[in-house]
Amino acid sequence: MARQQLTRRNWLQGGALSALALFGSGISTIASALEKLYLSDSEWRQRLSDEQYYILRDEGTEPAGSSPLDKQYGDGVYHCAGCDLLLFTAAMKYDSGTGWPSFFETVAGHIETKLDFSMIWPRTEYHCARCGGHQGHVFDDGPAPTGQRWCNNGLALIFVPADN
Image (tube, one colour):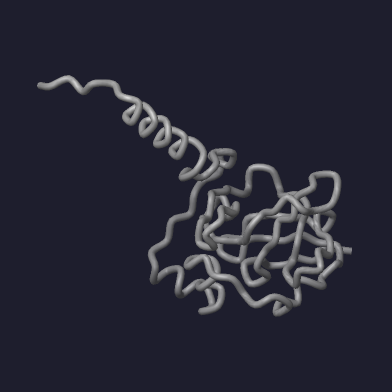
């Protein structure tokens, strides 16, 4: 068997592939303790409306301003519409002015992220850690204390009002 000579090109290609594997292509492992929910395509279609399926399973986006949850500011919590996992609390929500429900923080361990290149430049996409349902994108233009804006599709969420 011929031994491959270590060249600058081989070294750079190997380094680039390693960096991509570590940082660019994988989903974060923060939420690995949750039991995953796996359903067939037909089971997801039975569980979700056509619009929810488009967002949660096909990584679609609803039109800005279309969700009543954008202006929902009552006490309560926000669950994934795909599997009912708690993702956000009302205390984490703020008005970003974007037309989508926005949060400055998530429930720890309940979100996974990955890089999304669908708009050419990379963005950080996030999903429910239990069912993998697409929720939205996170940006670094949010308020204190985190400086983050977790921009969510309203159809990907269920608001559960607090018991008073």
